[in-house]
Image 1 (cartoon, rainbow, N blue to C red):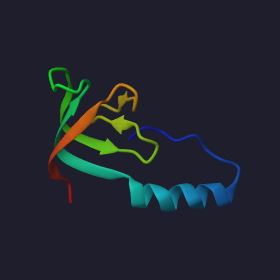
Image 2: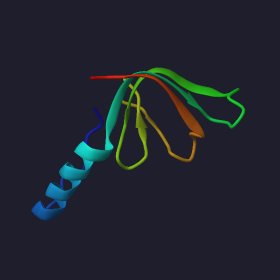
Image 3: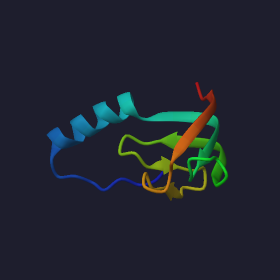
Length: 78
């Protein structure tokens, strides 16, 4: 998991934790596309979709929301 920047504001930390539980999801099998036609595959396999829109790969690399056109979800991690 990618490191987070520590905050000096406990209220902000609590809000961030609450929203990350609601908006972040892990999937065991997806295909991430970089174009509308589905010709450019950026990643296949497990990912964590972060609340800030970035997609975290198992290698701890991140895909920018601007680079991703769409994601096909094959199965959700439980």
